[in-house]
Amino acid sequence: MSKIVINSFKELEQYIGKELGVSDYITITQEQINQFADATLDHQWIHVDTERTKTESPYKTTIAHGYLNLSILPYLWNQIVEVNNSKLTVNYGIEKLRFNQPVLVGSQVRVKASLRSLINLRGVSKAEIQVILEIKDNKKSALEGTIVFLYHFNS
Image 1 (tube, rainbow, N blue to C red):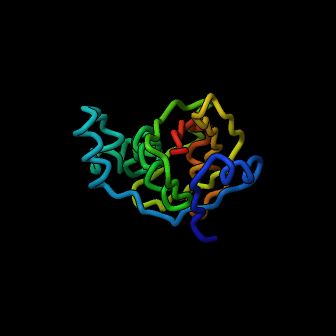
Image 2: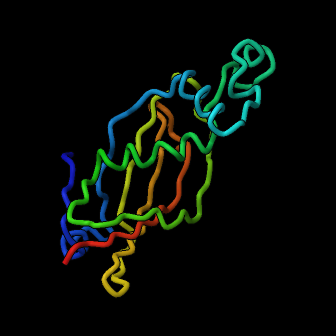
């Protein structure tokens, strides 16, 4: 599926209730996990201690932080939809977020996105997008939730 290009509320409106697309897979590396741990000051051993996880973790390897998985959504979202003609785009919120299972280091993940709703709030477009972060070759997703963006389209 190719990237959807949106320039207005009207163009986005046609996708309400429909799948917008699926991103490419990206591989979660130990370097990403370590950098995220440094940025967030969350150095819990299950994420960063590769030797300890071999013996003490039920997964026998490190796992990505749940919030690392969440933080890659904008990158993956931009592979699905390109929003133009917006003078300002705001991350407005996340609703009903569930971390369903851990992402092991070396796993490949991608996002599947659907437009749940779109509301015009006096010229500001509030878009609610259902996202599912899938793990390659795994039936259970890493996370699911609804991300909310505010698009301030130019007239």
